[in-house]
Length: 192
Image (tube, rainbow, N blue to C red; front, side):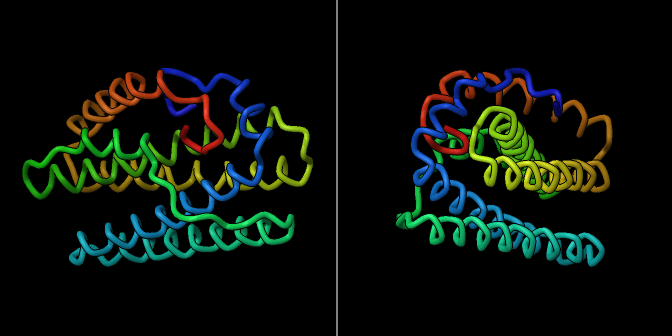
């Protein structure tokens, strides 16, 4: 899926299911951060109204996902905790190039695509491995949405940058992500 170099061990779903309240809180905060990321991309692309229109839709959808997860947290009687630091995302952020404006924009889009790809893959693992039927259905729906976001961000990068350079850079992102994801998959967080 998405050419990810290192798939998530399905046993991670057992860790996640062992503390659903924590995974839901972490997930809610991931959706909030995805909303913020889409808005920050809007700020970087004022000269591309067609892309801004799509980014607005993504931001609204991510905010809707945040709301949905928050409702599940409330319904199940869990406490919505404080924002979590996402070590995985912070490690990915270190790989964003600080070159030309075009290179930075392309890399920010690939950064977003990478997060969406891994999130989608994790949702797939949850869908296939947890016993909770409500969450299984919920994560299947989100998996489809995240896949759409991934393809949108990759498409924007290819639209705004040289396609060959973008494809080469995406391969570099995949290699880098594989090198850091090796130490993840043992905590009850979406990327942990």
